[in-house]
Image (cartoon, rainbow, N blue to C red; front, side, top):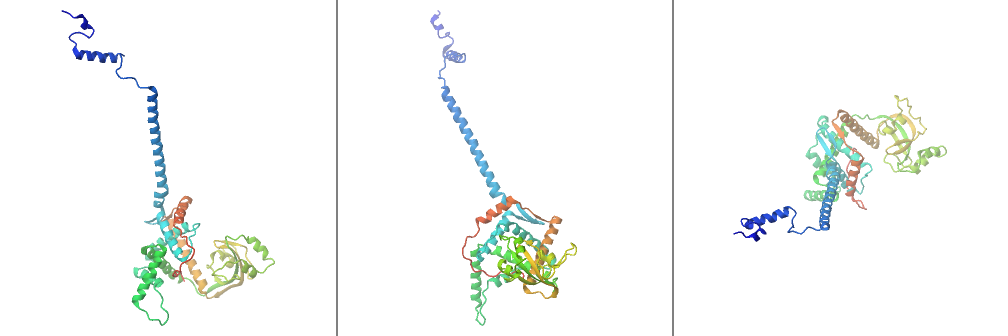
Length: 390
């Protein structure tokens, strides 16, 4: 017998499974949903939050990238950029900064300062020159041993007893260690760093000894007097030239000349050979190749611009063969060493075995790094003498 009312719930054969299928079918065909629809405003706010988080994350990544790139450019990369090389030996900007800091330490001990307007590039040249000499030493017959360095170290730091004073070797050794230890502490240097400096100093002196054998003594010299106008002076050389028309040369020299190891307070230099003051040679000795005649005794030169200032030179006596004084002989020897370094550097650069890398940006970076550790002291500390080429 049929039960017509069952048709409201499906056929008798459908059962519960059939009814569930019917409900799903109604949902698929747009029937009433069992889950209420989300508010569009809430959905929009959710999307905006997701977009905001995404943009913020991207912005943060950009900031991190910029900071990382800036750190790489300013702190990681510059110290590793090569500053110079001599054949297979390279120097980085970090090496240059470290060497200038060594110079800072020695100057701090002496109460001096590092001139950041000139030192970075000049000290790069010094690094290269020292390496060139180190590589040339075997060919020049120069051999610096550890014993040579130790001897020089003790010469500078072992106390000198008074004449007739009894000495105790043990006490002298303790004083040497104390003096040298105080020096290293005051300068902030390591023992190895200072020994490298000593090795280079000894090598230069050995080179000077070789070059001194080529300097003739006696030789032709001219007697001169000069007026020196410092680079930072507000006085114009032309004004000095006009003053010389009516005023005495010596009086103006006494007024204007800065202290100098080569000239007295009145500007008197004395007898000088060719090559002692290369910038003045053409005026004093003339130049046959250029058709320049030497300055006549009693006359004053035009202004001569040099790295040490402007000079007006007065020749007092013409060329004579005379013995070199100690001061002028040392100056001539220093110029000989400088000339050897310039010519060797030029030859190495021409051959491509010597290279230097420096520009305004690297210069600024080096100067900044050196300035950070520049000594700020008011009173100089006594320092042992570091001999030059004399």
